[in-house]
Image (cartoon, rainbow, N blue to C red; front, side, top):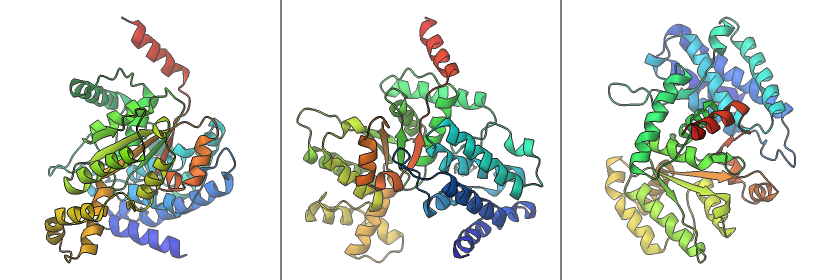
Length: 378
């Protein structure tokens, strides 16, 4: 199978320096991912409501990309590798699930695949919760992030509360209650935008905290957050001007930016043409004049030469666009209510195909009680 060969060679090459009992897991991880992907594709079919249940090679790539973030020092034993695999398949598949029934069905399938391929490991050791991976808690001596599991919700909450306090000192204050599900969503959003070309699609009803959690996740990643200011006269030209400013920040100034946008801010459907173009290839045809394009190419000329790339206009432009896609991250906050989201996803396929979806389920009773308690205690 060609697909298995491609992904197995990636995993084996990445895990070659690891301890022997860890390195031998590479092919198993790939086989488990392929089998789970097949189960998901057969059990979760797209429909009018579940139009985003589209499963293809992108999911396999996303799981492999997450697995390749392992560092030898942080994954000395097989159990940690399998826990990372569980986390990655849950983020790629489970976060798309629409209902509790689908979530429960996926968990059954995933547990079955885990038992089948990793039966030599203790289930209680592999399945112990929480399974949340972050790249912002620990760092190597040379300041590279270590992508590893958090020890407990308490450790995570302490860190996120500190970050929220720091955010509120330099930005508009956000009165957030970081209960368990909110913390999980922050880690999921940061996982998406922390990767090159990582763009998030947050889906949930209004008031579920999508924008606030995105702002906190961006602050933790040390990204600037940009959000358009909609006025009565805001139109396509204003949106293009805002996009051009973001391209300059990301491509010329090397400033990581989160472009936060809600569905209510899309006052002209043509905005989605530009968003779709950015998500699919990074190049928006009528965004820049020829003079703008020349300025962008000249601005990255030295970087391009330093990277050992031949100094041609085509190479300079490709280098610039690649840099924009690496440093500019769209975070789209849409509501699933009504038909608008479904119609937009059909007309602009990159909204689903080229983003990682995080579907916000209704907050549980405990979360509502903790929020009420927080605001009533004063």
